[in-house]
Image 1 (cartoon, rainbow, N blue to C red):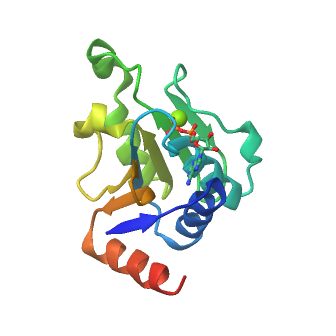
Image 2: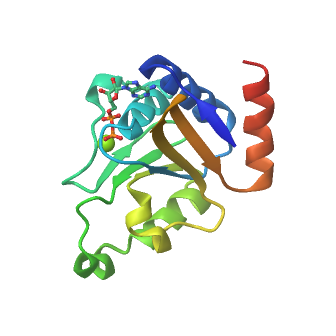
Length: 154
Ligand SMILES: Nc1ncnc2c1ncn2[C@@H]1O[C@H](COP(=O)(O)OP(=O)(O)O)[C@@H](O)[C@H]1O
Ligand SMILES: [Mg+2]
């Protein structure tokens, strides 16, 4: 499924709706630099009460944790070296966040280490095409159906 977004505001509106309507799950944010992954994360966290100006890519920290309701882990795997992987146990941390804490996980550059993500992850791929900016959505059928229903109402 493809969602189009013609502005930062539209990307954030998509993120708002997802934060408020989807069951807590892992959401992978894929796309080259400047495509809107952090813009989406800002919108998502804003919907849960966080000041979007305080949200940035956790490029060096790897993980930012938000004590929202539900809680959110914001990850950026861009700089993660394969050698660091065993020490960080990120796959366990992601699973625990969703399964035990009932929270969301937003993962920028998830395509760098896709093996860390659960099988039922929602994949959002941000790109710029001749038709403008697009978010290609892939994941569990039930979640896609929910998003499709919403997008038809827009
Ligand atoms: N439709 C759009 N959705 C998201 N960002 C957009 C859009 N159109 C323009 N932009 C701009 O593109 C940039 C996206 O940056 P950012 O979200 O930090 O990218 P990334 O995290 O993918 O590197 C911002 O400067 C934003 O204002
Ligand atoms: Mg970013």
